[in-house]
Figure 1 (spheres, helix red, strand yellow):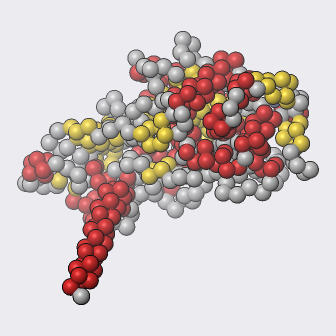
Figure 2 (cartoon, rainbow, N blue to C red):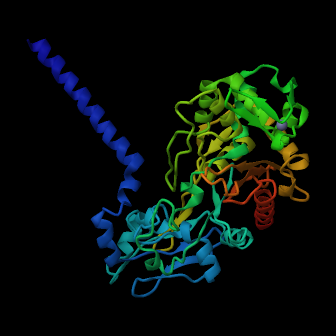
Figure 3 (cartoon, helix red, strand yellow):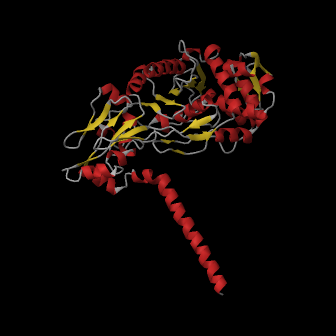
Length: 468
Ligand SMILES: [Zn+2]
């Protein structure tokens, strides 16, 4: 009896310890997210009694500051303010992951140090901390200026070694100074959505990076193979793979098939690999997974859980079918190739400066995922460089620098079939000193090789210039 009682007690203690452990784990992982929900009344009350800190870019440019009465002011040009609208967000939290709401704990001083709190004991109104973002406001303004007129879309730029996010651009923009104009705007398709982190698009041929990785990991000798592309390849009775409007590329090596973005070769590879292997590779790169990072949330990219038939499998290998990809996620995948197979965690906060002036670094480079083997990454890099030097991505070239990339032209599902496809480019600068990865989506921008690649080249060139 006594022994039983002791056993029960031990079991209960173990359960209690596990529960306590989980509590700390949950608070540690989700604490800041719970804190910044609009339902946190403590946060709402604090806005009345605390003067929020400034938001600065990586070069010290003040993007948002507080007036004496606590209202928010934007010292930059209107153009820069609009270019940064989704990064900054709004105090009401209408843009769910904007800095104003997502970093409210810092801006309102809840994370302030003891000395900061003591120094403000007798202040009339407490002051929160300043937040220094990893964002380069000049680069982001430049992107807004260069983005094709009359098109919406997104651009994400990050340092693929440290994770610093340099630009996170979403169009249509809105004016952060007048958020009331957008109150109640539809959050799924509307102007308040940050398309760079929350927009889901068919990836088109940029997904061939995933198919290529899967083939290199699972098919021995695949690099030495030749493929024959005659423009049309029947997969099932109802479904053909079609390429170059039926013209065909002729005989191709794997590298040529990638650089020229051959649908037939990559559809055939998907059929040979099968749905499970392709899904496993995609998931290792972060498809079907939530990215709840500390500084930002990247919506989940989707690889379908089931497929209708071989026809769908073939088209999935080409980047069509029911795939969905988020621009920031694709930039992370491109960056992982440049980083020897390791995807870094994207970070938006460089440092936090307390009310008494003490600055503490917040940047803490860490790996998010191990996406592929190092030798596989090296081969994909060589193919992506070839794509920019001699393939579909030549417009992304930057003189004097080595750029790796992949274009995509994603068909848009529409009953009338009247919409132009979305134009994609993902890639990076393959140089130690300028480890910048990029993803560009130009909605209805036509061929990725023209609009998106050209914009990506300009933006990478500017990022390199700004780093010199
Ligand atoms: Zn082809």
